[in-house]
Length: 245
Length: 242
Image (cartoon, rainbow over all chains, first blue to last red; front, side, top):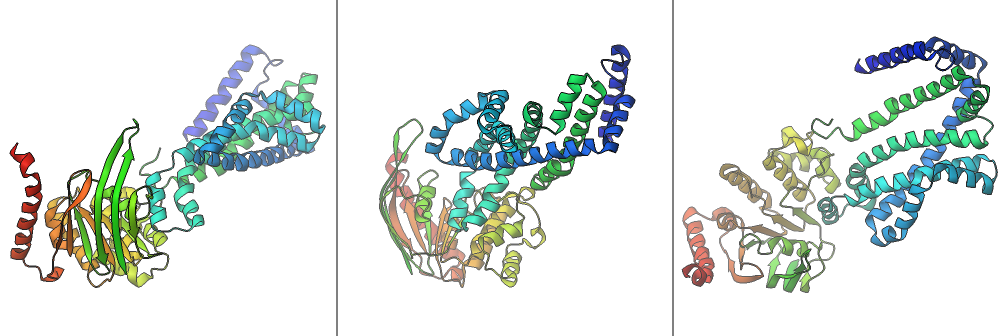
């Protein structure tokens, strides 16, 4: 219920703002919805949303898997941390645009280049978060697992993973927003489809309803993913916490 | 099966880089079926010694020989349960081969029947200790280690838990080592008491108790306690007098 109210406030604010700004700069919600429906009817909306979503999924999975593995290693092994740290700082501070442009130059305007560039942008934040998680692992529980001779896989699943899950959730949430921001830049610069490509088109035509229609559709998709995937995962992995927030 | 311990020294380096001697010289042996008790003042290095005996700490001088591959049951001072797993899952994870009959018997004795599906965060310290005990006994240990299992419980609860531990240890042929600073608990549970000095720890006396645990009367317990207090205080006499 509070969520619905919060949506209502958003739309009302938008509508009022559009009255002041004028239709040309900020069209009111009905015009944007009309554009959305027109795009949905022609099938373009779903095609471009699908293309972007596929890129997000691939790049996100790639970055999270690699990032979690590297982060865990750096959190547990001091040598790995010392070796990896300069790379990490470099990657963290490398502007997304530089990575994308270089990837397109080196690998051509290809799907592989786009996905790799997006994944590389997300990778360092996943590493940093999971490294923190691996550093915070409880040594007392580790000793317990050793004394009771828990097999490696069981120890990982029941002792290590539950301790990392808040960090995984945090990395997933911040990662999803980051990937979705960067994927549009990658599409704008070098892909013939996707939400970013459509927004590029809308920009060239100064078609603000189209631009907003695509942005909002994708925002809705992200909101759905958050509600249906990320939050239930968090709730499940923290159900043992007495009265978690 | 036999546990032989001969630790000649253990130093510990503090964060500030200073060296501290924790153990000066501790040697003893325990046979299967025998309950050894390390009695000593707080901070004398008992927990450090247990970590060495359990194979968690290899950085010491001396020798520890315990049966190769022996199953260890360890009751840590803080219960060290997995907060994200239920009471039953905590026990089953450590003891995958324990069958339902054995688990229910354990839960029955330790009064945990109603708490099987609770998470550790929902338990009092006394209950959490019982879960840790259930876990240690469920693995059918050949070497059982109990680190202050009765500390920070009120007297009545401690007495009840002590009886439950005694009941669980009876009829099991294992090497058991208990650490406590409470002489009463030591005399009621142990077959052999090792009195330790303050840090760095060394053995002041090795006191066997010949009467079986269940046959010890109050008078005998009082007599042994008196003897032990005398030995401990004898060592401190000079310091106490000054």
